[in-house]
Image (cartoon, rainbow, N blue to C red; front, side, top):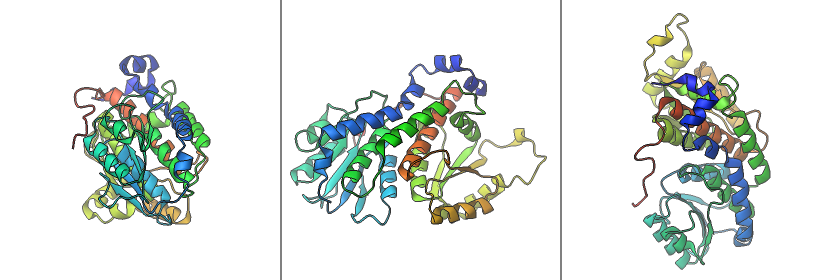
Length: 358
């Protein structure tokens, strides 16, 4: 059962959050500054002086998957360098390629073997990972290892993983991001979502209540928003035990039965319906928007016309480019998942993290 009164009781929230997870999530801005500083000290700029033949983003289990998906989406189809998403370094890797990877698991054997293969073949490698273990050993002396400087629990390194990738592609001249501005905006979002703020003015708490006892349909209105939706589904499952549907909107409308249910649930036709009669499995449509171009606006208008009662989540208050907007939206969902998990009593327990052995 969801104890929604907990959300507006800061002292009870603090007592319930014994692991300090809300504070850990709010340190996203600090993670951005720390990893940017570490990358500069490690000479990432010099490593990326020449554009590679291909940019390989290794997606190992955990938050790194969505971070890589988001980085690929931000680069878009106009990127002059092929961007490859893969669970392991591909067999064709060579000296002209560049590999970016992230893991929270220092003993990830598959990643360690991949990095060893990439470095032996002369590829440039940048990996964010703990400083000890097989993964770190595989990158030591032959690649750039960026260990965490801001200690947070496993699964709270999305900002670190994304920033490392943004720094690299920025050095390559593929995508420019104002990293200090990104860190500042994440700090501002953490302040907006502070536990002291009540639900009606706290965006993360409000979001948590919107998806409570419903099945969230997280549909992205642009590729970057869809990548954020994957991260949102991951954190909702991890912290609140909530199962979500994720799709780009164009893909979502092709699934006739689910789209029809979404239209019905968001229509609000029955003004006299008893909210207590709603089934827990009834969907809640959340349309995520990051891109601000003409194509993204056209998709948003079409979606709103069809799903009149859907929640459109776009951060007009956030300055900066798409990378900053996406990172802030990801943080909001992470904090919402934590609030929901604390109120539902689902945070922690066995299986909170499992090593990626295969």
